Image (cartoon, rainbow, N blue to C red):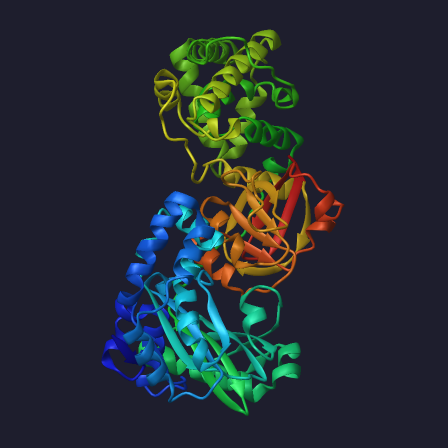
Length: 556
């Protein structure tokens, strides 16, 4: 079936996709939306099934080739061409998926610009093929969603030749407007940071660069249109464009409103060198395995964070068993009490260290007796052997991830020897707030532009080219040059996102906000680490405050 944006059927996102359904609601509510023709998602089903089959057999490239080599059925092709005669050339053909109801999938699928009538069928099929680009496939895998579930429609509309365009979103009672000269595509794709303004409920416009480029009247018009869209259909975000002094809304959505986020508060006891040393120790031995088998005794000798460890030449399962026994003995030695009491005291102290009462924990730690260095080294060597075994058995992707499974799971996976699915995600680590605070207290800092609120901590992972991130590890802070959509697959298990260019209006930051990932853009990270990105190793620990747009860092 085909729908006009004026048809009732176009209001259904399952048939028309979220993008087209929002525009249909807006147009039928009298908002300035161009007319459009929707090729509903049921027509895409055989193409997605074909793509999924080819993807499993041959990969994303062959999937796209199979789809683009399959023309639209003759009757559908004829009807699309006939119905599109109402639009003057050129036109745009835009992917519209049911998944795009949230910012998570912003910028995921392809749209085609400057399409002439005879090119329409190929452009529609191209929208279906965009589900199987490498970046889209990676995003589907990270989201644990099948590409066949994309439910993708195609929307045909007249093309504009904008003299300005951009995005706007409601934050509280204010409308934040971002804009560029010409088409908004470079802005939302992350290549152009644009200019930014805030329009208050009373109509006051703040932002000199935006006023100089776009003019107060246009900024007010955008704000008024978005407020009308919120009242009429519940939208709080839009893409817009002006052509010949006429405003058009190109896209509308409703995104979750970001909760107010507190910044990083540093208490005096965490400004001490002892706290900095504990931070290094926690970074070296993180996660459930580190907290259970290393930190209870190693906090008495923070110098252990800097020693080199060689894996013991033992069976990994036996090594883990021995490491558990050694950890219990070392904990009792350090705390000077029987093993069960020592275990409870250490657990309580580690909890205190992460609490607002960190001063009490620091006082306890200062009174501990350091462990025997030889036995401590043996315990760490045993754990290194166990972690190596977890990698070799396929239980985890790399040794760093092995810290983030607990002892019981590690035992089970080592006992299985093979056949277990590798742990790909580790989730939020409860030491991240502590480390963020310590890094903030002791690191240098650089100011950027806020793109997504929140606070995060992680290892810096520089990704200068999307698709080349083999060194990415779960809970890393992704550092890119531009906020391009190709980075989106990394966000599903990243701690935070930083870019040196772009602006907060980019689609990638909508994805970050939907995932609750703090993000900062336009950040001179080179000033923080003292070198150009291409010359920097990833061995930096970063604390990211997406609310204040400040990034702090120390060597890892």
